[in-house]
Amino acid sequence: MSPTLVRDSTHRMLEVNPSLTYAEIGRLLGVSRERIRQVAGKRRRNIRSCKICGQLIQVRRKRVTQTAYRLCYCAECWAIAKQRRSIANRIDFTCEVCGIDFSRTEGIVRCMKKRGHKIRWCSRRCHGKWLGTNR
Image (cartoon, rainbow, N blue to C red; front, side, top):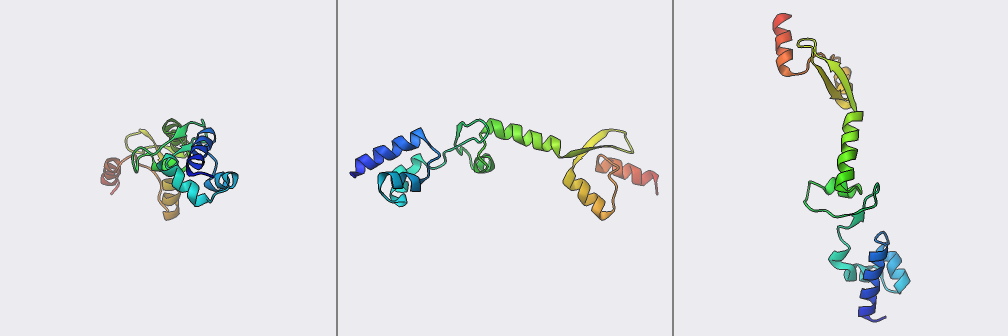
């Protein structure tokens, strides 16, 4: 196959089905996976589809969307999933000093119980007030 035909066929296949691997495209065109990687170049890198909505996603800024990209979420779906996780993994308490309702994550609650502590205060300030009145 001529190099231009391989290049054009590769780009067409990636546009139609971006989830194809280089090995699958190479097998179809009769060239190696490495050659397909070279031909695809930057065009293929940093492109995935969201596993919730199916929209194509790209990494725009390092560290900000890298986790979302690695887990195959677009920015909108990542924000929704992150919010759901933060709400689902929280336990509500009432402060013994000021009476304000507050919440802590399950991990913090488990760690405190393992150490033998009770979660009584919403902040260090309330903890200090409680210590001042109970000593």
